[in-house]
Every structure is written in structure tokens, then in C-alpha cells.
Length: 296
Image 1 (cartoon, rainbow, N blue to C red):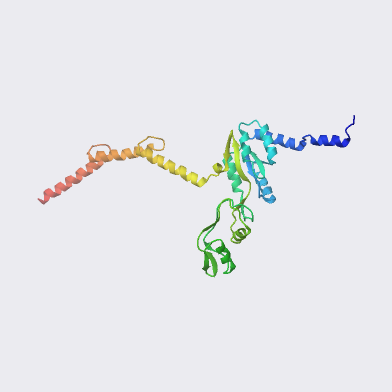
Image 2 (cartoon, rainbow, N blue to C red):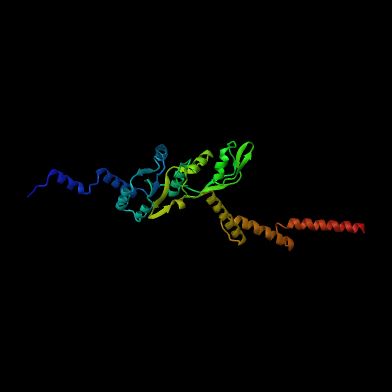
């Protein structure tokens, strides 16, 4: 019987699925972090330059744990985690993924990441992250070929004060549109920077639920105004319906007092508050009558 040579043995070993120890440890560490922290966020780091990533790491240090990994390893870590429904997080692992771990409020996390983003020009071949609008107004360009370039995108322009001016707003790209080199160059020259550089939080896991970025991205000013409007309308309704509450009782008592006083005055009902006015009115009528009697 022929004995297998060393080459054949090596080939058999290669055929076995061998996972490097470093990857096994990374999966174990990721699963441990998932079980340790209450908030797990998925971010996409595509188009994030190394310099900005270093800056973001420095800003997040002490607040958030940031771990980069491959999709496959994240999936294995999710399978090892004991958290309920965490497998739903896999659907949101996209692009160049990384995981964020924190115990802070997920809305506060989104606000922190959004605050630390910076604008950048769009490059040829990139997709518009949102609707791109060239707004009406003056430019720094002298009359020349730029007018033709603007016209190529149906942007109305003219000359004002010796400079090119854009006459009206124009949408030059919709969200998801691929931007070519001509448009990218024009936007850069106009100083329009539609790209946001930073950690793009896609979704977070909290208490068995997945919260997407569309929910996390709250306009705080509008939210505050809505609450103030609702509070004002509720207060007015409570006053109108005479509902005694902590916030309405003083106004209701004041309103009741004013109405009771007016009623007593109209009906000539003598009270501690109306007596002075009634006596003053009686005295005035007496004096008027006395004056009339003297004339006669």
C-alpha cells in the first residue's frame, strides 16, 4: 500500500476549514461587547478618509466603543450573542461596516455623530446623498464659459454687477443619482459640498428593537415647537372646558372671580367687594339729585 507523501498530507490539511485564532478572538470579543452594552449601532464607513476616522475616534473616546470588522465576522458574533432579536441587526450591515457600543440614549448617539460630520465636495462616480440644488444668487465668476456650463444643466444665469448671477433655484441631481465629472466639477467650483463626511449611523439595537436612522434623525427645534404648541392648545382647551388642573386653577379662579364680580355689580348684589362702588354710585346719584333740586 502506498503511503501518502508530505505534499498530499499538506493538501489535506489545506482542505480543512481553518479559522485564524485572531478572527476567532475578534468574534468572541464582539459577542462579548454585544452582551455588555445596551445600545449597539451599525455604521457605514464608506468614503470616510483615514484622517476623519482618526478625528472621530478621538472625539468618541470615553463615550463610545468603535470596532471595525468584516460582515461575515459580525454575523458570527451576532449568532453568538444572547440578546433577544439581535439577528435583525444583520439586515443593516452594509458597505464598510463597523459597530458602535454604548449605554447612552440612541438619539443622543445619533446627534453626537451627526454633530461631528463635516461637508465635502462630491466626487465623480459618487451618488447624490440627497437632492442637490443650485440656489439663485450672485457668484464670483466673471462672464465667460461658466455661463455655458450652467446652461448645460439648464441653470438660468445672467450678468449682474459684472459677475455671473444665477437667476433661480435649480435641482441638478436627485437623491441616489450618479454624479458625473462635469456636474461634480461645476458643484465644486460653485462651492457646493453635498457630501457629509463622518460615521453614517444606519441603525441601532435597543431592548430587542431595531431603530433606523430615519427615526433617530429628529429635528429638535421642530420637535420642541410641536410640544409647545400642543401644551398651549391643551391649556386653552382646559380653560375653555373649565377643567381644574395644577396649571389652570389660578386662571380659572381669576376668571370665575371676574365673572362673579361683574354679575354682582349688574344685579346690584351687595358684597364686601361691591359695597364701595355701590356707595360711591349712590353718593353720586344723591349729589346729582341735590343739584337738580336747587336749580328748581
